[in-house]
Amino acid sequence: MSTYVYGITARSHPALPEGMDGVGEPPRPVRVLTAGALAALVSDAPEDLRPKRRDLLAHQNVLAEAGAGGCVLPMRFGGVSPDDDTVTAVLTERADYYEERLRELDGKVEYNVKATHVEDAVLHLVMAENADIRALAEANRQAGGGGYDDRIRLGEMVAAAVKAQEAEDAAEVQRLLQPAAAAVSVGPESTGWLLNVSFLVARESAEDFLAAAERARAEHAHLDLRVNGPLPPYSFVEPGPAEPAGSTAGADAGVP
Image (cartoon, rainbow, N blue to C red; front, side):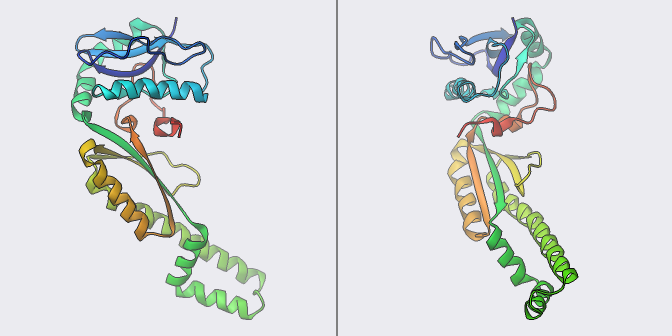
């Protein structure tokens, strides 16, 4: 039977609560596979696994329970390995990497930050900062809306200014938050977001990071800034025993 992988810990990691259940209907019991100094939290894999809310929550719950006892390298939802032997073989093959990651990520969590523009606010901003746009908009207004070409030109100018503002705002938010983080991972581009970045933050520095995010939000009223966390450090672990190299589920696979 295929093996579902939740995460990787040190072999000395405290045991999970007895009777811990994982994904599937009925839920599959979570068990531990060991290889050298490492352990993998796994269960039998259900057939036709889909990212349903119950299974997403079960995956997160296993990681939360494991994380409460110490560092765990989280695998993304849906990671299925052919069998137990394949999992332990990967643990053995990549032992140096996993042990280094466990040391590096101990005591740290991930915060994923996304931002988008508040449409009316950013339009007001680019109009206020661009004299050429203001002049053309006023000329069109005085001409009863302006000709077709003038309206097209104004739309293109506004769109270009908003696009430039997106790049400027993304860089500025990352600049403000990066000093409070131990590491940064830029996520894949996603429609609708001008910023999608994950920050690795020491637990004892979490309040500083959240305060920096609040300052960034207050100083940029034209931005809708969303902070999701604390999360297991998905974005700071390479694909594991059951993950495809191109997997991008990460924090976005979470359930609010």
